[in-house]
Image (cartoon, rainbow, N blue to C red; front, side, top):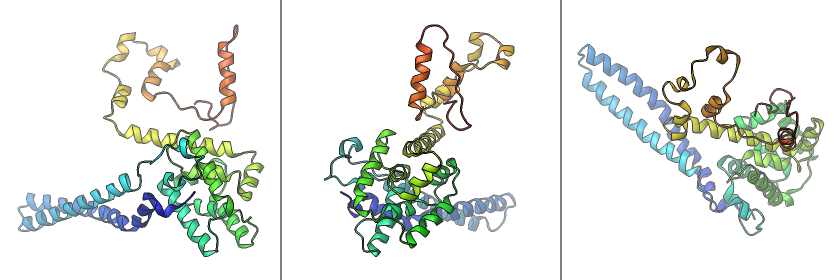
Length: 323
């Protein structure tokens, strides 16, 4: 079941332009407040007769900035990210549950555009090609990164996809739209996600949309590769967001205490020619291992067998050897 208009996220999509205005005000009055604050300081230093005027304008500008900041932050943190109403893993196979409830903001926005175009074409649901077309947002850094990892030009691929639809080469598989969403939900579950994101939808389309299937097949890639890269993007973004909360206890632990190295002795020569992995792990934490299940099992077998226990990891740059 899919009914986007009955969800909280649909209301957020409708309000995006209104709250976007507050985002614009926030930027304008931030810089204006800085300029007025500088003028206020100058008026105070030189004992200018414009001190009161500069003071009043600064307070007004700062107030407008604060109000805009509060409204825009509320939209970004609350309206765009409503809490999931159900456990994705428990409802993915329920045909009666509205999977639109479990879309993140960007996915819902792209699918809403696809639904509007499908309605204009006289269809209840969009085809796989139409869904993919609206997912390929060139302003979305996640989508751009995903295609760059495949050494594909996003704009060129989107142009080819559009050309195929205009020629009528795209298959009319709109009846499989709900199946597509169900498959995207399964990709989200694999990465232990609570919502269906753009990468999950593209991963599902890697087995549904003909041009994407052909392109990935030519590169000897498949759905699992799309899932792994999407998973890596989400994991990296999560780690970056977490690192910005410097006051968090886990982040403070990574900094360590004063003169912690002295506990183990002063070893400058050893430090120049070796890596203290215990120290590195305490600072960075353990890297999340994404994909490579067969390789992991092979390394485990090597390290647990009798005799020689050396494992050599070989692969191209960016293939995940360090992880």
